[in-house]
Length: 501
Ligand code: NAD
Image (cartoon, rainbow, N blue to C red; front, top):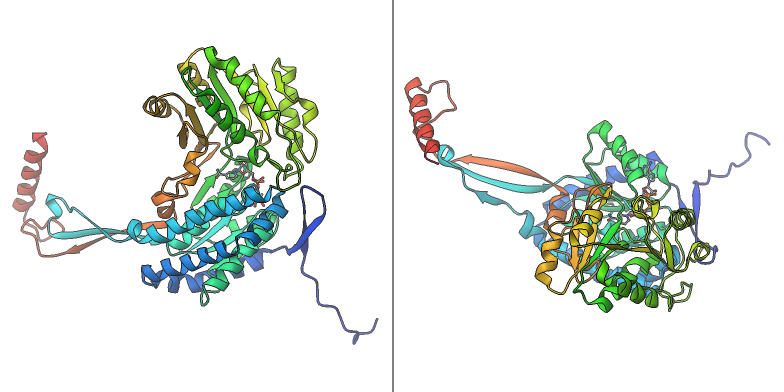
């Protein structure tokens, strides 16, 4: 080869996504390295100020245009989600619908929640006009999972944009196409703000580059193990961090509950999306009087369901092939430890389609009760009473969602108040997920911080407190010129007031 031979332009590194149902390739996407991520963050920084400076009503209208575009392209977005995750297209469409509800809420409520608010100044600062305002943090990095590749990250993206920020989004390497489409639809619907929402695709290394990029906050959704690693990187630069992680949600069923309704909800909460739902039902504690009747109803419903690749299947394949081994370990381990299989068993756990597994009498220290299974498996255990149910539900290193089935809504709410969970549904499962005004998030290994609702908007802001002095006070204390007698008068006055009560 001579010096003058034409050299081919270096090909950007790419990765391929595959259909979890068929194993066929779906698409190729570039691997964004540190330079591409830095570039996206820097472009976001350039356009963010203009976005934040827009009157609130204009930001709202632009976000509603994006929402309209997502609704218009609902079939395309749902098809992309279904291709990448393997979930039935009806489930994917429902995911888009829930996302639209949240985006509408964030767009319409951001100004009300975040606008400047006057506060009382108190006796000793009566000469001050005091107010606070929530200002955008700047550029928000969002790292997303694959199980709800639109709904879950949009709980951060939509709310962060509505609060006046730019966003750089790193979708899961299993579902990058959904993230790319989201940003394309934004650019098409909201011209003139290119770079305000950028999607960078790639594996863990791209996520790590985003954590190191100097973003003003990082919102992470994924497993607690990864959250620890990403948080450690953020700690190096004191980058604020929000973690939405896994769950091991419990359902409590009382003696007077409607058992058909409870069984119906339990089966859907445990098996929909092949059990790959952070707030899916994994444990059930039923009081002994109705335990057998409930097991029978759950089993009757679960054994009729078979996963498949067709649009009518109740649920699809396991999206992450490696998760099948975890599910197998949990089911076999529980059975070896003395659990009984009411539906399916270890033989049900075959890649990529895992048939429903309903277990009972599972020892509380089995992995199926302590670790996130993230598959179509549910354990229905008996307890002596509601107190024991609450104790067991709370004895988990996860604390995300929970549900209570109980005749009276009021009694159910009283049980909910005793549960250590970020969100509780009474007489339904996952009821909170469809209410945009309700914050969502957990504690312990389920993470910390909240997305959705007013808290979810405030999560992407920093509060600025302002005082404006209206007149020189008679008891001015912030000056060396203040006579000692004035200071003493102030102290006497304060003491007299605070001694009263
Ligand atoms: P994961 O932790 O494997 O990956 C999540 C994201 O982090 C992916 O985009 C991945 O590329 C990225 N990542 C991996 N290693 C990284 C690193 N070292 N630095 C930076 N980024 C890195 O999780 P997953 O398998 O995609 O998702 C499943 C988990 O997410 C489950 O535990 C589930 O419960 C949880 N989840 C939680 C919620 C919630 O709102 N609480 C919602 C959906 C899913």
